Amino acid sequence: GDFREQFGLPRDCYLFLFLYDLNSYSERKNPAAVLEAFRRSGLAGAGAALVVKIHNVAGNEADFENLQAAVATLPGTVLITRTLSRRELYELESACDCFVSLHRSEGYGLAVGECMYLGKPVISTDWSATAEFVDETCGCPVRSRTVVLERNHGPYAKGQIWAEPDVEHAGWWMRRLFEDRALGQRL
Image 1 (tube, one colour):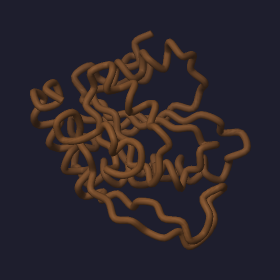
Image 2 (cartoon, rainbow, N blue to C red):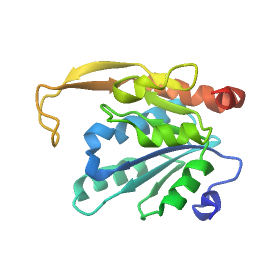
Image 3 (tube, helix red, strand yellow):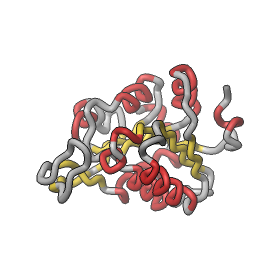
């Protein structure tokens, strides 16, 4: 169905989408960075909204509670927790205007690739696998710095390296795409 209507979002609202599976480790997928970038963009409640779609709440209740608390403090943010069919997921990706992934590490970035295929601009950490196919000619790469993990996060062991995306830069990309719709169409 029409996700804008289903979740009470105005038709003329610019929608940023972030989706991830809680079993993929919140620390790695980094929803806090997406929320902070949206906050810093200044677009929350100002003609834009952030849609956060998650999967697999069961077994990840602490991560889910943290996410709920963070979303509650950010106007214009919608949290979708129900399971969507593959068709509904494609409809959600199609209904949104831009996909955001501020991951710290990524194997391929399926949702990034899917949204690019659907003609959506993507804002993605310029690190890991997505850096191989997202650059300024086709997307919005976000600067990052490498960090050494101070503790284990599932299979990501203390001492390994991953990225810390620049949330200010990501927020800048959000503002830029919101203000320059033609740029999003070109990308």
